[in-house]
Length: 213
Image (cartoon, rainbow, N blue to C red; front, top):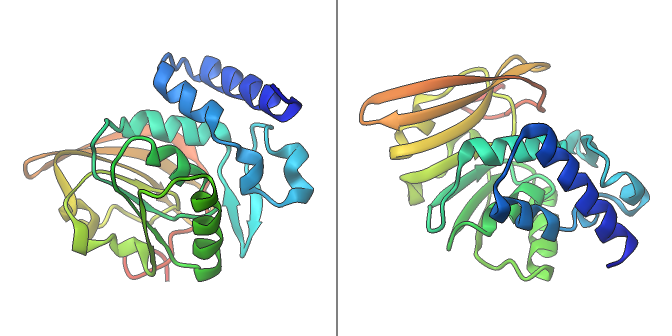
C-alpha cells in the first residue's frame, strides 16, 4: 500500500468514526476512490485533509465529512436510479456510481463536466450519463428517480425536483441563502414530502431557473 492510499484510508477511518458510520460497503467505496485525482496536482498534499478545496470556476470539491454525511442520508441501494445535480469535480459522482447501474449527473459548467467525465472514464466508471445544463430543473427525461442529491445551495425545494422524485424516494439538498444553508433530507410518501433538518452546511449557490439567478 503506497503512502497516498494509507493516508486516504486513515482519513476515511477518521471521518466514519466521527460520524458514527458503520456501513462496511460505504467505507470500502470511500477507501477505493482516489480523491487526490479530483483536485489540482498542486493541492494533492491536501486531498486527504477533511476540508473543501477549490476546483476552479468558483466551485469546490466538498469536505469528505459532508460527502460521507450526504451519502449516508441519501441511503442509496443497489439498483436505485440516482440523479446528481452538480457534477463538480466528479468525486461524489464516483462514489454514487458504485450503487447504481445508471447514474444521471447534471453540471452547469461545461469545462467541469468534461473534466469530470474524462477522469471518471479513466477510472473505469462507465455507467454515468452526463448532461451540461441547468441542474436546478433536474432531468425530466429520465424521471422519476429513487434518489436525488443536490451539491449546491438552493433557496427552496422546488416543486420541479419533488415531481421527479419517485414515491418512497429520497432527496438530499442544502436549503438557505447564498452563504449558509441547512442540509435537508426529503422523503416522498405519495403526495406527502417529509422534511428532516440535518444541520448547518455551506455550499456554492445553485444557479438556474429553480435556484439563484
